[in-house]
Amino acid sequence: MDAEAIVKELRGTYGTGKTKSYEWRVSQLKALFKIAENHEKEITDALYSDLSKPELEAFIHEISMMKTACKLALKELKRWMKPEKVKTSLTSFPSSAEIVPEPLGVVLVISAWNYPFLLSLDPVIGAIAAGNAVVLKPSEIAPATSSVLAKLLGQYMDVSAIRVVEGAVPETTALLEQKWDKIFYTGNGKVGRIVLAAAAKHLTPVVLELGGKSPVVVDSNIDYKIAVRRIIAGKWGCNNGQACISPDYIITTKENVPKLLDAMKQELEKFYGKDPLKSGDLSRIVNANHFQRLSKLLDDKKVVDKVVHGGQRDEDNLKISPTILLDVPEDSLIMKEEIFGPLLPIITVNKVEDSIQFINAREKPLAAYLFTSNKKLEEEFVMNISAGGLLINDTTLQVALSTLPFGGVGESGMGSCHGKFSFDSFSHKKAVLRRSFAGDVPARYPPYTTGKARFLKALLNGDILGLIRALIGW
Ligand code: NAD
Image 1 (cartoon, rainbow, N blue to C red):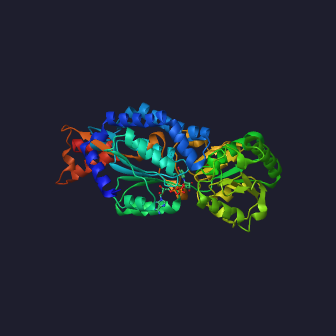
Image 2: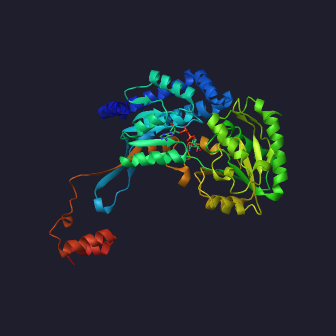
Image 3: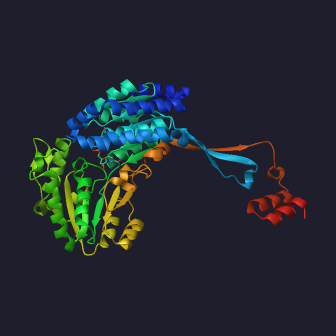
């Protein structure tokens, strides 16, 4: 792979103006859609090989979401591309003004392993819709999906403007040395900092889609069964907890714990059986490194006696069962880093309102969830918790709504994606002011006389009487 040569070639294509046309964008979006439509089995098999991802999760969370994003872009593209007329003022009278979205140029998408199909193609859809040439670098930690993406994009897409570069750190480093017009990175914050530093050299703007510890606050006045099912769906039903917006920990009051725990145990057994390590409905841990990382969190001396459910591990098959820990110390490893796996600690507070302070004392998460029927608490939560996104009485569904921006704040990232937000992330909003030769105001030109000054001051202050006086020389 010669990163410099690839960027040079794509820059050449972009320079011809080809990627800017509506027709080219539509043809490439349709080609992407066909990839998902024609190769569903191949993609599902690759996701199974990389993560043992259950077929239904692969379809709903990756293939279908990617197809929906594609369909939306195709449906809305004309509207998104249309210049937006805006108001003008007396200063430029007579004139018209508009905001023209223009592509940025040649952009780089670096994606992560946990949703390797969706996280690769969702930003690519935005980049193409906005009229850019794009290089995609999928994650080497999901090698089967990376290879399917390279093969299918090579077959279906216009390779003079859209490329897949496979590889790990050396290849990504070589790509990051190039000058890009935007970098869209999904992954952990440590690498996010490397991306940001590389981008700074060329003054390249970036979107960083990172993670964090997303809390779930559970109040007492709720339907426990439904709440627990929704927590399970967002945790273990999303790649066995290996999802950026999966619940990372629960906060509730001591009195709530027995009811909550009972409901969780019951529902978990209904969903995954008595031996969840054998369940076909749970993804495995992606690789031995991540298995060791999660094992270290569980083997931490500070939490070994805190496991109240699960805790089974099968190292040979990289499986960890849904595991709940109660009252882990705040300085334990599991509370210091993003868990990104099937472990779920429960933290207890005296009053449910105290959870707001607990969350705010930590880095801003990508998501925060609250289960309650108390409207006052809900309002307090919405007004006082800073997170990428909030969801009341459910988990993870915010990701499926293209009318909401998806992205982090602070440690959980910068910039956003999905629907029009992706289009905007890959566009420059160009300000265009149009004037004619009529209505030239001599007062703006030297020599600056007192009369001109009186006129201009009155004009800019919106002082109509002063304006009339200045005009008639009174
Ligand atoms: P990863 O290991 O696949 O890394 C992401 C990308 O960074 C890969 O393409 C990889 O090749 C590249 N990379 C790794 N090390 C690098 C280096 N030293 N220099 C340059 N590039 C390098 O994925 P990950 O980081 O393990 O992903 C998990 C993290 O991503 C979690 O924190 C999760 O919350 C976050 N995430 C966020 C979102 C989101 O949309 N906000 C989605 C998924 C995952």
